[in-house]
Image (tube, rainbow, N blue to C red; front, side, top):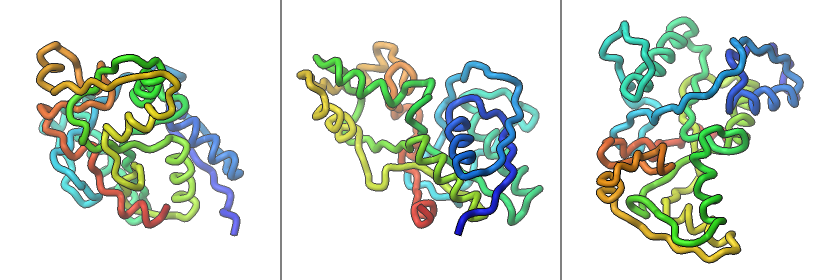
Length: 233
């Protein structure tokens, strides 16, 4: 049965996920209104601090140490997002839907964190590969995320949901080897220890995409539990 036509207000709507979300909503016939202050450059978003693996939706959230501090930085980003969730839950009990996506990739990504690696492998030659080949990797295509969000809204689902992928586990070596097989040029991966990168001043996540140093103590960032969302996929 076709979903009822909805009137949806999106705050922003000019950056990465939102345009895909708007397009998907319009394809379903929904009425979409954007409320924004114009387009602006997207600032790099720091990874949210997650200290252990296999985090589900009931895991304790970060707490803002200084409740008056609204400055967004690496230490406050996660706690500020958690505070927003609490506000929504307080004002819309049993009527809210909070989706917590992981690393979002795909068309329109201004960070190029994901595309850096396939493009580098296409160039061929010796390629610097960072840290452990066995480090787990999670990401979700922006188009899949947009489709899933619209489906959740149409079905009037409520609650908290982690949303990332892939469906089966994937480590960084498997990720690079998959692109390597598609490349028409010869290449070789030179894996170096994190200490080498740190000693040479390489900034993780930004200067060498998808690498999170063990010094951040964020083993759970790319090991989020998605069983709840998978049951509704």
